[in-house]
Length: 308
Image 1 (tube, rainbow, N blue to C red):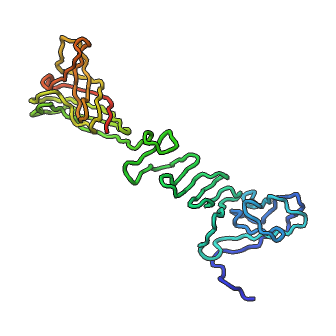
Image 2: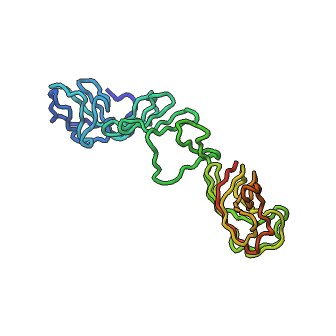
Image 3: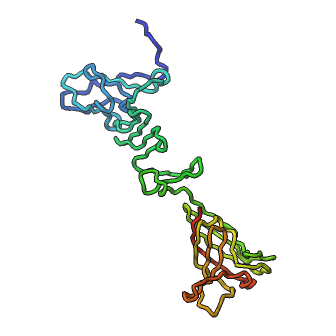
């Protein structure tokens, strides 16, 4: 009878010679006479019943042997066909949740046995899940390692929830930034009419809403200006008050009182004041004014503050 239907477009069927195998109800592993890459490449008939790859049989010894789950009885009729290459036309078939087995021993596969979900399995364990759940589309079950490259979000305002198993706002790390800024010496009432610098550097690291800065301000000369000294140019405006240690030279302070000088942010501003903190009996403090500075004053400070 003539062949009905389409002919094989690609690939081949090869009947394997297993005549040397002995089926005795005890042996389970037999030679294939060739090497096969996957159990799914075999069409196995056991006494006229087609066997399921990975369930009824697996491959052994690097794909050169077949191992049956149940030992074939004495005199069993075993018929094995190797399917090589792509057989038939392009795959466009609803496999309805069937498991696509990829390796020799049948424990690495891709399946979609849950609606709108794809599971990737290796070593018999689900490792990766792709689903249609909003906000949880890809689930990795056991760690993730990037051998190279970075994680980049396509939209701003996104981050990583740390230490929790759900999207908790308090645990969202959504910003990290490093950079430099240029601090400048200014006055609360009037800025210096002229100023030159030996050094004028600032560095910052922002983690979430916390900014850590360090700066050096070292004018070689300045003239004019009035009011409280301000170091302007912070990279982010403060959300609340903050203080930090300061090292300085050539600043006039009140020698008649026990005094501590600190760098201080006095509110939601983008500049730093130097504040003289007097003893407890005086219970007050005052800003260092710009006219308290020598022409070549040196100021170094480092501290953290919160931003919005």
